View 1 (cartoon, rainbow over the protein chains, first blue to last red):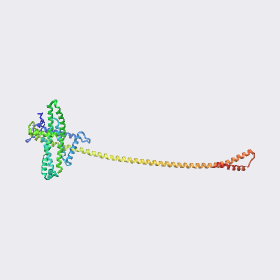
View 2: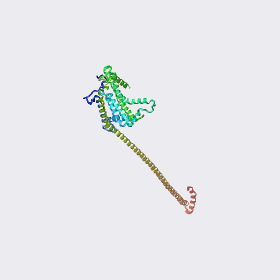
View 3: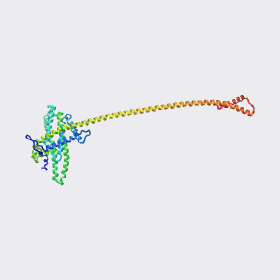
View 4: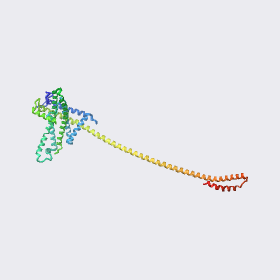
Length: 244
Length: 194
């Protein structure tokens, strides 16, 4: 059903069924677009780092600008202690960005519009940050849940709220990205459907909406990747520099 | 904001109308059929992306950034050096120029002095010479004057004897004539002598 706006999110197997024990790990269109995104990133950066000239070529400039962009973002939000995690956050940002952007190509598949993908990424970040926090600060990492300067009467309530907000981080992180991507693509599809159903006379209005939405969605694709990366930095900052 | 609102709406609709969606109509995202596959491929793809980026690409980029930075710093340092050198050179040049000006002034002053001295010396000399000449001339004139008086007397005596001779046809004593002439001339000549 091509007119169903949710049809674009369907996952289907490509090639033979692969089983790992009981688990079905067949190569799907989602896997294909993960691979395409990664390969696009790698090819772009391979070209960008092939020649290390003092006056950079265009692709080299792109690679170096994204490098300095991410490193500045990490330095601003998580400080210099976060340097060992630079490569991870860089890969994360690039992966999410390219998955989002490739999803903007018509008839392609948006990897990040699937809650399971964003949830795995977010929970990996959550678990990693929690482990880093406990390794760096030991049990005093639990002070994160006890903000300084709170009246003792309010403390039980605040601690509960802090713990809930901490535990909901992976959910909010993953749902934010997934919902934004899904909503944008669904809306594009809905307006696309309107263009067809209203025909040559009435179709121009939804078409113009569709064009405007495409621009907005490209912005959202970048913004959500940025938000995803910067929230990771902020969580990392909590784990590295215990402020409370 | 709008997109987020709509997204929550879409999720809500998706969940309520067809929870854990069937193939069509619901949300394919909530269909767990390929969840394991997605997790598996995500881990593999993302891990390999991370490894390649962190091991190969990022070090290269940071290296090229570092070399550029160091090179720029080097160039800046060099530029600073050159600037200092050029400033020094300019100062040296100024010094030399000033010295040369001073020397030129000195030489001018000296030469002016010399010339003035020369001129005054020459003037003095010439003045002296002129004075000498004037003196000599004056002396000569004096001598000439004296001589001329004598000569005049002589001539006067001679002419007067001649005149007396021719008029009176008598030869007079020379000495008496000369005493008369001398008497007269003394009286008259004093008028012409200073």
